[in-house]
Length: 455
Image (cartoon, rainbow, N blue to C red):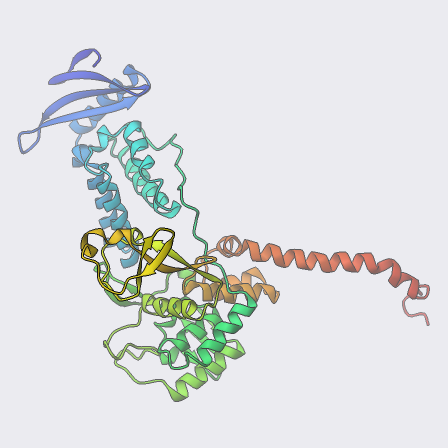
């Protein structure tokens, strides 16, 4: 436990924490009569004690905040609420950060006093996170890092150092999901389906507009009639449909990023599509939106369109898919029984079940169902990627594409579509190589060069 020494009006104690030392001392009582303990962790006993002595002086001067005995949850929650109240973050980000905080709480780290967090607890927490995606891990890391930075700043000095400073962030055991674009054949097949078998689909125009402009679906669903100029063939993007902190759809008066506010030129396909829709299908509504959910009298969300998109892709096999029998144990809860939908294994064969088994509610996970396994991940965002891919293949510059997509930084455009840019660059390089190799033959067929202006 280490040597004990008296300091101030309490006893000071040293604790070994990994390869560092923590020094702790009592400093009076709070309003509830509980002991106030100041502590610090450093490489040596002397440094840890010196850090606590600085805290004592700061407290005597009234500089130390009341967050001395705050938990990790307290600090992160305070930072989230401050950013939300200051309009630094908005509803979507607010909900995502609260979800991250819940994940930190569920893993037990949130209830620990910030001053008591050590490297062992940090490692244990992140080792338990490797089953999540890299995106989830990064969000948890950022939340904790901001928490510890706040607490070890000169202003607060709740802890002596940031335990994440020399920490190697783990990587997910999952492969990063990457939404790809349609191939040309898949895109043409998708358009054909929308214009024929799915012509009456309520989201047909939004899906085609995304495919022809690269706009985000939230931006499309937030368009008003005044945002579309058929005379100038432009679309003004200034809002988006998102969700509030209660997970309810709202019309946000700003797009996803500052760069999202933009005016784009319509492709010929987009112009023809919107002209047809406005002239033949647009209906007035209180929100003056181009697309509106009249049945529920509310906004159309990205999730609604995404569900319809995925159904079409699966139903018509727009991308390669295989049917495979999968154990129902993959599902989180017992599904309702349907005749000939589920299968039981008998020997090496699988037989469709015609009658609900007596043990269905308790042993449902031992049965099977057919699942479509696509050759790659897909969602409605695929249409945005498809537009960008076709634009790059057509030779559009990255800067123009950045503006059309509403990316806040050119690096986002380059990083997102690096494979496509590389493929396009290689194709252009092949043209240069072919031309250079043809120069000797070209030279043989030409007469001797003459001076400029000389016949």
